[in-house]
Amino acid sequence: MTTQPSEAFVYLRGEFVPNSAATLNVRTHGFLYGTAVFEGVKAYWTPERETMFIFRALDHYRRLHQSCRILRLKPTLSVNQMVALTSEIIERNGCTEDTYLRPIVYKADERVGPLLDVPGTVDDFCLFTTPMSAYMDTQKGLHLCVSSWRRIDDNMIPARAKVNGAYVNTALAKTDAALSGYDDAIVLTEDGHVAEGSAMNLFLVRDGKLITPSVSSNILEGITRATVIELAQKELGLTIESRQVDRTELYIADEIFVCGTAVEVSPVTRVDHRNIGDGTVGPITKQLYDLYDQVIHGRHPDYTHWLTPVKAAVLSGS
Ligand SMILES: Cc1ncc(COP(=O)(O)O)c(C=O)c1O
Image 1 (cartoon, rainbow, N blue to C red):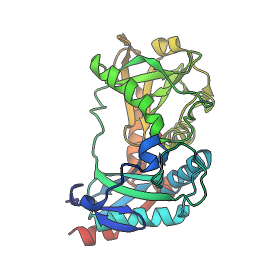
Image 2: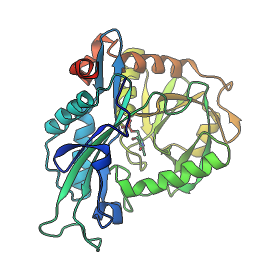
Image 3: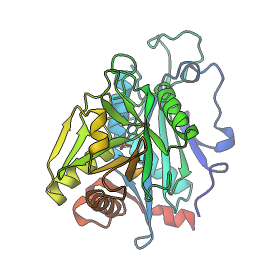
Image 4: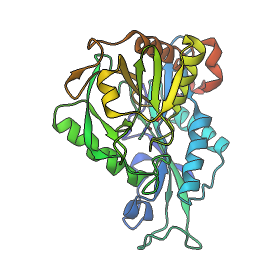
């Protein structure tokens, strides 16, 4: 059984420390101004192989480095070093169940004043694990609302970068949706087009085609989104339209699903109290859900290059 977060190791300031010792000063720049970037990475336990597989680790750390470039952060570790530390923390924490990993590069200097580039300042890398099976009960079909909160624009806080402070936007949309009885929210761009879910990308099916808001729609360029596009094209032979999407296209879609590292591929069966299609999980969504499930668990031979095995997890966890 995975070590629980309260006792687990956290990587902070260049070393593994117990969770209770993983503390930051209140003056830390990343805390004062949200000047940090992060990733959500998932590793899956595959019982028949007795192995943890990290899904698309390289892609997550490449994106983390891109987020650093946007926010003028200087990561002290390479992409490969970050992947290696991710394997190591899974081993050290004896993870033998589906696990979410949160790597963060943050402005670590203790300083009042928002300026990013101050000579001599330090940007640190930290990483922790937390067990995560289902993010929410998604297979029943989600009921989403269109949020009254708009997605922050590329020229405000770029959604393309996973900036910690930007997730206030997500928190507002998700919380108001939950308080109104919805499972989650869809956010629109400032000009009223569909961007994405609160922390997930969104796809529609119309007349057998897969449609998703383009990368210029103030979305995070999701790794699950890219995975779904590749699987839909190669395995199902579907045509993909990556373009501007109107709000009312949601209401007339045959199927809708959301996707992301945490939410995986999850059907949406209602939006704003309107049934999507016949209000049940659609056939294309179901096929993509099944394919994704095979791929992340190493059960599809054509996509094992996306998996980093952490074999030793079993040894140190038992
Ligand atoms: C705003 C936002 N959009 C989309 C996604 C999905 O991205 P990914 O598939 O890379 O996890 C996430 C999740 O991290 C997110 O926070």
